[in-house]
Length: 403
Image 1 (cartoon, rainbow, N blue to C red):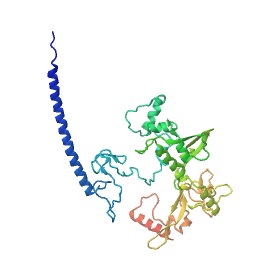
Image 2: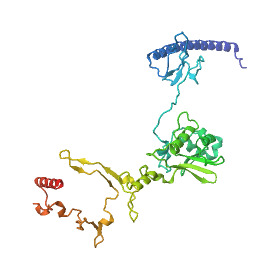
Image 3: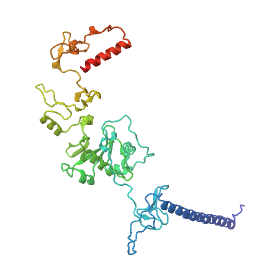
Image 4: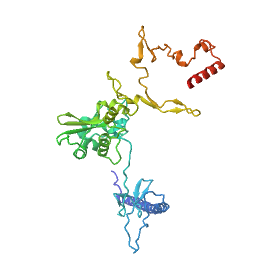
């Protein structure tokens, strides 16, 4: 026969344990109050010393000549350790301009002030149409796929790893493929703000977002990112960085905005039509190239980046021009066909203006050296030169170049 448990003794034992717990809680509350008081004093000291950025002392209230408070807005103090704003009175957290502890209202500084950024989202490598060998993915940990994305689970995971959020995927109906990248469908708000008159109400407007996104912390649905991308790509283009993006109709009710097929053209090759027209009227191009075309159609310069400007250089002693102030084309270093003469063996050698043919070694004819002849040299071209011979040869060349 088993013994019945002694419930009375168990109750007594539980009461003792409960009393110990209550005593420990009281001690903890006392310690919390003490630490809170010390923390408040330290924060006020930091506030007085000006080390707490973004905060103002609660006692700094402006009073007018009649002794009335001007009710100047008060900012909370910034706690750099916890990275949040705290109340000046109870050091409680300030959430949405109100202290959660005492209810005091504050004016919280804007966490995202306007900035003048020179980075164009439209020209970043993430906006390239071509696939990269390996696009850097974000480490997002385990991805929980919503039920509505079960049929496109792999696509959803790619979008999240490439910087999109779940809210952005749902709001703009994002799509991704290895061949085309990430596309978004503009919502009603975006259409009202940025769509042109050609895009009708029943049309679908797809926007290319690239192959990776970097959203701001407060941009939960990606609307700010898409709006900024469209502004950089379409609206606010500059002369130095003209837009290569274009919006085209690709179906009965489908408009697509993305970089054009001429995306492979370098930025330096892009020219404005009005510059061509002005240069054609004046007969010369702004960088020294001529726009006068001959009967064969040659002479119209299309590849401007190959033209290089060389500034003039003078001898500091004599003042003579050493290098002419001119432009030259690095792409066509050879002489034109009308200055070439075809040899019997099919090779081309340049000719001088009077018809004298240059040698195959590329040296100038003897008469152009003002009487200088190789016969005047006291060494054989096959022999090794001594130091004195080299010095003499250099002096001879200097003499003839000056003349």
